[in-house]
Length: 117
Length: 116
Image (cartoon, rainbow over all chains, first blue to last red; front, side):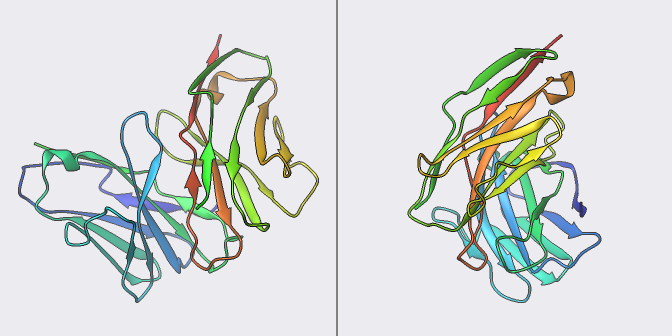
């Protein structure tokens, strides 16, 4: 299957700083990318959906100004956690889909573990 | 809105035995896809098997097969000849076929332990 990478795989930062996480589709063009958050021993919670060249669509309860998503190209989406606080510590996963239809498989990145001190 | 339920938070099975993981879902749509994903300790999400709702035949992938009961909105996963490497969280997921850009709806997961 296609490969999606995330960088960094883990990051530790101080409270109040901003952290950027990159999600790249390595061998296909991703028209749609998704960002998930996963707490320990829980399921994936969708945060937002982004389509290349347009603004991201955020799920209810997700702060747009705190979690900035940019999908500037067909192979790269970024999630920036602004003014991070300890409660933002979590595992963040992106996925990418090549086509617009639901039949197009989503490929998941390996995730990024964020720890805010 | 669609919902996905997995009623077994944890399960265990002896190596080489067979285990079935349950999943039920709720939707008013007729065209959709169902998936089982595996998340091992590495936390990389891995597609195990997928089923198109319009297909009556149950999907199979080597040791993995599903029992898809559309009327009952049930989508169970059977793992045959369980291996130690099957130890993981298993998530059942639903996605609508009709809506552009539609996202997955994941169940809460079942933690499967394969015992030697």
